[in-house]
Image (cartoon, rainbow, N blue to C red; front, top):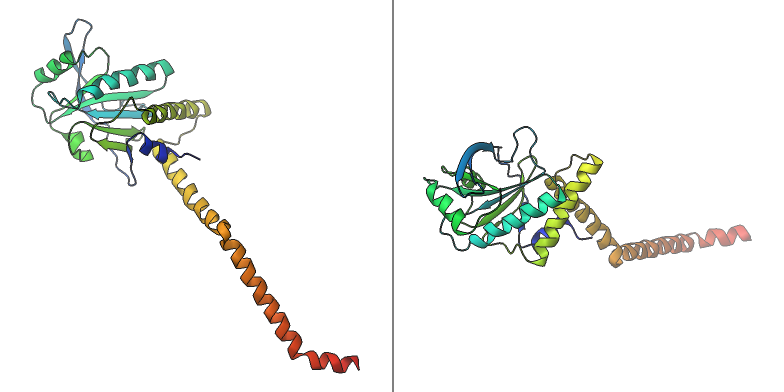
Amino acid sequence: MTTLSELTQSAGLLPVTQAVIVPNYIFPVLRLTSSGAAKIQREPMTCSSTSPAALTVLYFSLPGCENCRPGLLSMQALAQASVESQQPVCLRIVVSDWPTRDEIVQELREVGWQGHLGVIWDKNGAISERLAVLGQPALYLLDRNGQVFAYQNGPVEFAAPGFKVYWATLLNLIKNEASRHESRTFSEILTAQESVLKSSSTVMFLNNGVLSFVWLVAGIGLCYSLTRFFLRHRKNFTRSEK
């Protein structure tokens, strides 16, 4: 069984082994209109304050970051795939520790930004500090509770087959969750899968010859005990027969 944790690693991301939760902060969010004009409004990090998205993707970028630009365009493709699948996914570009918005708007125009994705202007670096982001680009995936379940500090190969399979799996999990009205988050699924792996590894360990060896030792011990018992009481058996 290929677990979500294994798919995470095949996508070039790292699974999170401890609880890291980001509050649903309210930030100024920048958008470009169809005419290229910039507008700004305050929005929650997970796209909704009352009903957070099942999956929130935070992509950290900075104006002038050449390594970040491929990811900016890839995020637009992910947004389009999410819209087509009609799944509740919140995709955000995060610009942290940046004092003015003009450079951010200019960056979006230069990379040919055409999507409707919101760019969180985290000018005080609240999110990056919370997540201990080491640099740009960086990618963090959060469940509906704001808990991080996968991340990467550095470029991510969004077009790689491993990431495409991983993204399709996440969208399918959201779809199945909605159809079954389940409440498990991605973090809980990861935890459950790790528990199953640990328990099954014990069973596999026993099945790989160890269980047979235990039964063999027990059988030999039983035979030895019965033999000693017979030899010890042989005279009594012989006399009783006479």
